[in-house]
Each structure stands twice: as structure tokens, then as C-alpha cells.
Image (cartoon, rainbow, N blue to C red):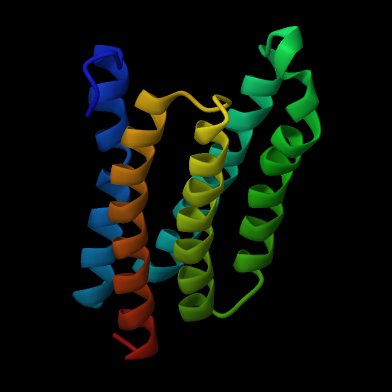
Amino acid sequence: MDATLSPSARWLGPAGLIPFVALAAGAWLGARGAAPALAAYGATILAFLGAVHWGLAMRAPPAERRADLPRLGLGVVPALVAWVALLLPTAQALALLAAAILATALVETVGARSGLVPRDYLRLRWALSCAAAACLLAGAAAARLGL
């Protein structure tokens, strides 16, 4: 992680993975309700990731106003995908959420190349997104196997 991240971001970000890991493990151990709870948490986090871009748009300097529409769009789309995921069977929901979390990080990478997303945030995001997606996919596999 980048040295310019605040100490709070350096520990709160990874702490947000605790429910992903615990619920994915619970799904594999056959804990009743773990996979749907994992989907609910994944949807919550995906919506949160979109909200980051509303914050960036609201605090953008005038030179970045040209990016308002894409930023605000990236703020809305993850929440819509999260909502759709919660309407699907659990295994499909978990797979969709994993893909959407990674896709959001990919779009943010494009934004970072234009200076619209802080690089230190992006490094943290990729690490957390890959771990979260792995947990969501593990939960999807457990749900497909009927564990």
C-alpha cells in the first residue's frame, strides 16, 4: 500500500475484508445463510464503491468538471448492479458482484490515467477488490455445490 494513504485507510480498508473472508469460509463450512449474507455484504460494498465517485465529483476543481457525467455515472451504476444482483439466485449474484467489483476497479484505472482518481486510492482498491472478488467467487462455488 502507498505511504501517502492515511493510517486509518491503511487499516480500515483491509478490515472491510473480514466479513468477506468470514462469510466465504462460512459458506464452505455449510453455515446456513452465509452465502446470501455474503451477497448482501458484497452488494453493500459495491454500492459504496460507486459512492466514492460522487464524492470525487462534488469536490472536483473546475478543471475536472468535464468528467462530471462519467464520475456521477460511475457513482450510480454499481448501486444498480448491486440491486440487480440481489434479485438473482445466490451463486449468480455472487459471481456478478465479483465481476462488478473488478470492473469498477478497471474503470477507476482508466480514470487514474486521466488524473481523476488518486493513485494511492487505486493501489489500495485493486488489492482489496481482488481479495473481495476471490471471496465472492469462493462463495459462488460453495453455493453452486449446495454447501
